[in-house]
Structures are given as C-alpha cells and as structure tokens.
Image 1: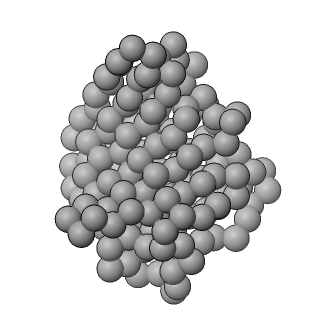
Image 2: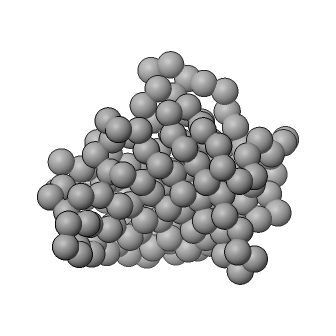
Image 3: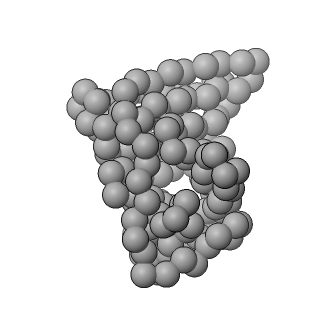
Length: 146
C-alpha cells in the first residue's frame, strides 16, 4: 500500500486530516478516525447508533455520532471546496449551520460514496450489497460490505 502526502480539508474553523494511499483514505478529526477501504469502513470514536435504509435499488447506512466531529488545528488548509485526494474525490460544503464532506470512492470500492457531517456518517451503495457489523459497543464500528 503506497502512501501519499497527507492533506488537510477545511472543517469549520479548523480542518480534518486526509491520509490517502492507493485504495484507502483515512479521515482524522480530534475525536474520530474513519478508514475507507474497498470492502470495509472502520469508524473509531463514540457513536450512538446505526441505521440501514433501503429504497428501491439503493441502500443507505447511517452511523450516528455520540458527539460532534471536532476539527483539528492543522498546519495548513489544502482543500476548501472540491479536489482529488489520491483516487478519491472529496467535496467540502459549508452551509453555515452544518458542514459536509462528501467522499466519492474509486470504482473498486463496493460503495459509491460517503458523506460526513458534524453529527453522522452516511454510506450509499447498491441495495444488493450485504453489510455486516463488528462492534466494540459505542466505541468503534466496522462495516464489512459484500
């Protein structure tokens, strides 16, 4: 797994760290770490619940955070809107009352894209995909996608 340069994306008054490699992307905040891999997603940090909603041919997984995502104090901001980070496209949106980070994944991933907000993490995929969960109750959750 070849690592690339660490980048920082704006998140409110601070930033989030993005650490890409060939097939993975790690997103770090003060209180959360999210690792996006082709067949799994690992979320380290306090969460309060999970939901799975299926509609026609789409499935959405929601992971509700127990506390708001806190930004880091990065040395610089590399991304403040839309850019490519490794093989991932990231889009930062600030609505004033909420922040969104949309991550569009490469083709080899079994999910299409993910969205991080201050209060939850959402993953969008085809409805035919099965999702299995491994949990350390309310501290860490891993989503395995088949």
